[in-house]
Amino acid sequence: MSTALIVTLIVVLLVVVAAVAVGLVLQQRAQRRREQAAQAGQLRTEAAQVAAQAPEQAVRAQESEAAAAEARAEAERLEAHAREQRTAYEQTRAQQEDAVREADRLDPAVDHRADDYTPTDPVTARSGHAEVGTEQSGHADQTHAGQTQPDVAPTDPHDPDFVRGPADGPDGRTDGRTDGTPR
Image 1 (cartoon, one colour):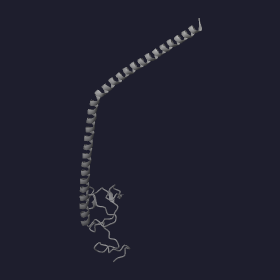
Image 2 (cartoon, rainbow, N blue to C red; image 1 turned 135 degrees about the vertical axis):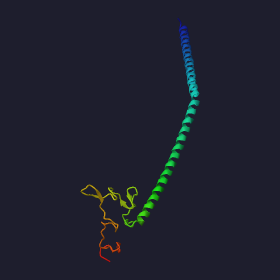
Image 3 (cartoon, rainbow, N blue to C red; image 1 turned 90 degrees about the vertical axis):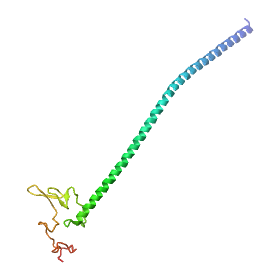
Image 4 (tube, rainbow, N blue to C red; image 1 turned 180 degrees about the horizontal axis):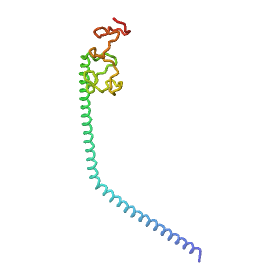
C-alpha cells in the first residue's frame, strides 16, 4: 500500500468517526429536548391542577378573613360592654361610698375626721358598728366564751363601756389638747 492510500484511508476513517460523533451528539440533544418538553408538559399539567384549586382556596381564605373580622368586631363589642359595666360598677361603688361617708359624718359614734378613717362597709357593719361576731378593723380579742369583741374602745358617749379620756370635757369633746391636761 502506498502512503497516499494510507493517508486517504486515515482521513476517511477520521471523517467517518467525526460524522458518527456528530450524529450521536445531535441525537442526544434531540433526546434531551424531548425529555425537557415532556417534563414541561407535566409541570404545566400540575400547574393547571393547582390553578383549578385556587378559586376554592381563595373563597375559603375570604371566608376565614370574614370570620376573623366578625370575631374581632365581637371582641371589641364585648370589651366595650365590659368597660361600660366596669364604669357602672365604679359609679355605683362611688355612690355607695358617698352615702356611707355621709352616714358616718352624721353618726356621732364615728370619728370621720381621724387620720385612719375609712368608710364602714355597709355589708359587714351597720351605722359604723360591727355586727356581733364580726371584726370591723381586723383586730379582735378572744374572750373565754369564744366570742369576738373589737379591741377598740367605744366612741359613743351613750355606750356603757365608754370611758372619757383626761382631755375630754363633760360633753365628751376634746379641747384640742394632745397632752392630756384638762381644759
